[in-house]
Image 1 (cartoon, rainbow, N blue to C red):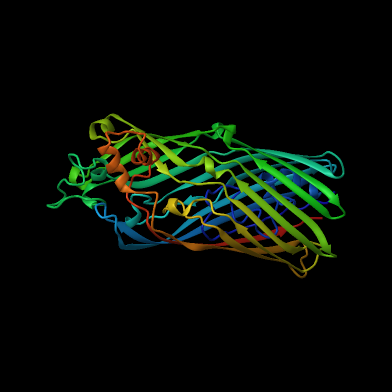
Image 2: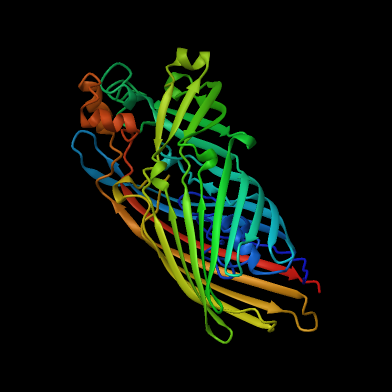
Length: 473
């Protein structure tokens, strides 16, 4: 059995996918030199069955970073006439680091065991005063302790499974329009804010929320089940299914909530507890790999994510000071996702000890949110991807390998002029006496009856992976 120690440093720059996880990470699976049929350390969670496609033992050290760039040109809504007018622009760039330490050991070409510690590149939410009723920043990040095993059932069939303790840490920052919450009643949109009617989005009636919650380590176990089948000489297909934590429909994250009262209410800070319920998605990864030339492999990959489960963050706040101040006990913070599909294909040189090795892939990913549900918390139209990779085996030191991959994801601009977020729904619901059979009250219950998300949204992603491997005889 050949043995190796692999040390890799990875960096990713760009906007994360709709929901950051080891499966939606743009530097894993879609990226060159990774995939569901490759025995990379990334397959410990991506497809543990692929770990058995080599006899090389390795230790893997990696670092990741994600830089988000979002541009939003807002449109403001007049609640009386329904007319839209040009509003402020927001340009936001955020950074999210991560990392991974992993080890892989093979036993007699039949069984593989592996383990990893990782911090996934998180989803960082945009911030900007003009976006305050949808997002004032925050993030969602997962951590993982992973144990994996692979068994070669026959020479052509490999099975693998990994278990990940995967707690989620969530930070939500947003504002609430206390005047809009009261409709045309007392303290409502017709009440006084500095000598004039408050209307909608008046800073004097803006109440701010800062929520920090997380799940317990042992309450969030994710299972990754993988299969690799050899279809012919140098021809493989891999398939993996990733469960939601604990196979649950919904998971609870517990922590704290700080509320800064609106200026017209004194501006004090209230402290209390919070629980956020999240429905994490399941996902599927697959890849077909075949030798199409003496040292050239074709890669065709596919990914599906059950993001439709994440319709909203279900926020519960509790504390004696909250009740007295009229802080709502329950708030829905919509994401509005539906299931996305991603497909990519490309070619990659097989590693046969050459000095240079290259690869490239092109792909498409369907939207994960409807245009009318687009907001600062969810910008995900149909997009195009392109990935390139290069590997260098250092001359005079063949046991030292440098590897770099780059990925670009282009999201066409989205123009929203009939947003599902409509403050008039809140007013209509109150007028109806909270008749939840009405459209206005349904929008209120689902969290869409807040200041509008009409506007123009732009997004792009650049993803890099840089690695160095030290291979031992």
